Amino acid sequence: MMIREFRDEDRSAVMHLWNAAVEAGEVVYASMDDDYFERKFCQGPAEKAGVFLVAEEKDGRISGAIHGVKPVDLPGTKPGWSYLTFELVRAEDRGRGIGTALLEALKVRMKEAGAGVLAITSLNPVNLDWKIPGTPGHDHNNMPGLDDACQGAVFFRKHFEPAYHEIAMYRSFESGFSVPGEIEALQMKLRENGIETGRYNGIQEYEYETMCKRVGSPYWQHVLDTEIRAHHLGQPNEDPALWPDGIKPEGPRPLLIATVNNRIVGFTGPV
Image (tube, rainbow, N blue to C red; front, side, top):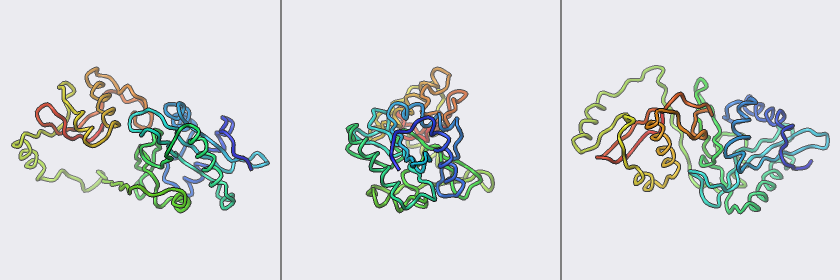
């Protein structure tokens, strides 16, 4: 078995590895087709800074794959950080050390690229989609760090130190949902204190850099920069990395904001 760089001829084998893990319930990733592979691993941040390796057996069979992103200057990334996107090993080949060999090879390449950290985190500029367990296929467009229930959780805990615990929350609107009656009263109370809440009108200018700096998020600064510009121009967000599922929106997306005078002090993100 040898570890080598991914070649396009490996695409179908990697997609098979991926979809086999999805179908077996080992990961919560969305299933993959050729279009999804192209958008996630051949364009944008992956094209600019991606590291893609495979484990090839003597008979030419691909038994594992790993992907990561080298340190790159993009909104939301941290200087000197590299990111592990995914790692998969064929079920019948596990226990032979393939996963460890792939991970060590990735670490070498990241260090050579100047990385001081390899992280599994939602800050990875390659955003993978995941299906929310216990739902009829509802999805989220930004994979968190390590899914505690995934097949590889024990493996990754041996090689990475936990930094924080992310909690994903879900609320279905399909049955039993209504806006609580006290919301209108709460909005009026906020208004009495100079705080307005509602939908951004697409016209007014607001200052929001202070909010983004205080929460330490250049990523959300970039989201607001580009989405508000989209509203002013009456066109879709200009950054393909912010398009849901990689599909260009029809136009500017709604922003729900809280404002004090001419400042945005809270928002939901594009809806």
